[in-house]
Structures are given as structure tokens and as C-alpha cells.
Length: 361
Image (tube, rainbow, N blue to C red):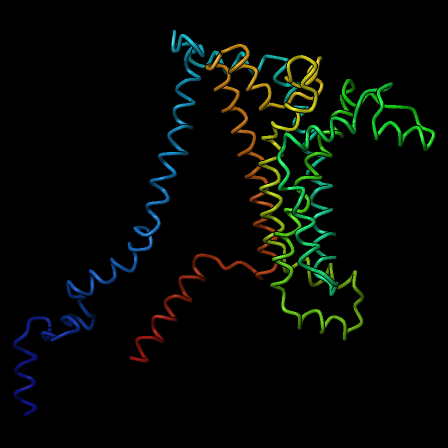
């Protein structure tokens, strides 16, 4: 019987024996069958096919408008008469040399700084308080979300009456009078108007971000808090040593979204002082943001080409700040995952895992 087997092995060139279900063996290695190759392709390609509808929809409603905006920015394009002549990058150079554009950039960054950082700090504090054992948790959570439900128009009307110029009766100036301070020109001066607009943003969005952070805090295992309490850690130490490290990814997500919204702010400055200069950001453009400047170019001056150029410049600004946030968040999150493996180390681990699977078979 052994001689017959030897003849069968010698009869096959290279010592190959046809396999019935696992493919042929040639030179000690398995040759995958057509069905096995199709199965491997399905495992690798099917995830991309599943998510392809999203990317197709994104290309239709997201990428196409962006490309078309760049196309419009290349022309002298009027709102009523339409495309007139090709101007190339002239709209970009005109915007970059316009002092009003840089004034809007400064106003946007100032309002963004005054609104984002206090907003995130307040959201963290509120989320930490709601995460404690308090009565009527549902009522408190609904209460902090109520400002977000209020429309921006109503918010602007409320805060426009709270912050008025000196000499006009307003809540903010009445409080300053009560404590012996001079009244403030909340709509005429640059910094006070930025503070008033940032107050609108903080009042409306702090509770919303607090609930997002609260959902992350409730996912932290309670055993970690119990172990920290046994070790003698107080509430503040538990917050910084247990809560913050575990909600860091969610916190970074909130930071990124708050950054994007803060740089795109439009409704609050547009509705803050409508009586002066038609709502373009104050009589002297003291609180005109970049989106408000874009709106003025498009619908007041009817220059869609220049407005499109400003939109693309704002897009570059948002992407740049978003990339900075991404790399910072990547480093912070990677700090909790231990040392990063090199590509050679990952390949070695993968080969070792495949070898263990082969031995197990």
C-alpha cells in the first residue's frame, strides 16, 4: 500500500495532490479555490459596499455644492444677471486684501473664543452635577435642554433687550448701576457686543453639550468611582482622575463640533441689532462675522462670485482648525492606549496569529 501511495505522489509533478474541498497542495502551500477567493473578496469588499450609499449621497449633497462653489468663485457672477466673465482667482485676492473681510475674521475668532471655552466649561460642570445622585433627574435634564429648544429669533429678541446701549433701560446696565459701575455701550462698542452675542450662544448650547457629556459620564463603570473612593479620593480628585479620562473622546467630539459652529455663527449677530445698518453686524461692523460678511456680499451687493470665494476661504479656515483639533485629540486619546506599535511589529503579530491558527487546524 505504501508503494502505491509513493507512485501516486511521484505521478504528480512537484508532489501535488488534488484536493477535494480545500484546494490543491503545491510545494507545501494551499492553492485557494475559486469559491474561497470569492469568500475572501466578499469579506474585504462587502463593508465598503454597505457604506457606499452614504458616500454617494455625500457626493451629491456635499461634495457637488463645494465644487460648484469653487466654479462660481472663478467668475464675476451677479445674483440676478448670472455668470458674466471669467476672472480666475481675482475674487480670492480681492477678499484677502479687503479690510472688512479681515475685520470679520477677527470678530469671528473673538466671539468664538468668548463662547466656546465658557460653554464647554459650563457643560462639564452641569454634566458632573447631573451625574450625581439628585432628585428629579429627568426634570433637571429637561430643564437644561430648554434653552436649546428656543428659536434663535426669540433668543436674539430676549438678549437684545437685556443688552442695550448706555442711557437705555436694560437689565445689564441696571445691574451695573446697582453695583456702582458705569453703563456700557453693549451694541456700539466692539468687545461688549461680542460678549453679548457670546452670551446668546452660551445660553443656548451649554445645556445641549452638557447632556452629550452626561451620556458619556453615565457609561463610566461605577466600580471605578467606588475603587477611587476606597483609596481616599475626594469628589474633585475622582472627577479629574476617573471622569475626565473616560469621557475624553466625547469631550473632544464636543470641542470639534463647538469649533465648527462657533466659526459659522450667523443668526445671533444677524438678529442682535437689526435696527442699525440693516443687520450686517453693527453700524461700524463691530460684530460682523465672516458668514455675515458672506451674506452681505451675496444678497446685499449681489456679488455671488466674491461670496463664493469668501465661503471657500472660511471652509479652509474651519478645516485647518479642525485638523489641529484632530491631531491634538489623536495624541490625547493615544496617551490612554499605551505605546504605539510600529508597522513591522504589527506585521509580526499578525504572522504569529496566523501561525497559531494554522497549528490549531
